[in-house]
Structures are given as C-alpha cells and as structure tokens.
Length: 70
Image (cartoon, rainbow, N blue to C red):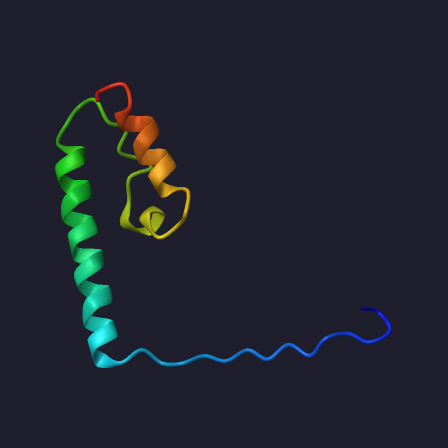
C-alpha cells in the first residue's frame, strides 16, 4: 500500500426533502420516547439524549439502564 496507495473518493449526496422530513420525524420520535423514559426515577437520564441515540452503542446504554427493571 505504501508503494501504490489507493485513491479515496469521498462522494456526498444531499438528502432529498423527503429524507430530511423522515430524519426530522425520527429525531422527534426519539425525543418523545426518551422523554417518557426520563419520567421513571429508575433510569439514569444523563446518557439518554437524542445525540447519544445517533451512535451504535446507544442500544447498549438503554439496555443497561432497563435490564434491572425488565
């Protein structure tokens, strides 16, 4: 690879108006779900944010919080 490094091409496709609408709806639903989860005193709410929900490990955080309750 050092002798003949690969060419990397970064292609970005803008979201359509429908994609933007779907993204906004998903974020709104996530916010509503997290708000409901925060209502219980048994859940540590610091890690439960929409921003954290965008990462792959979020399901593990939620599972860790809810396993003792379920």
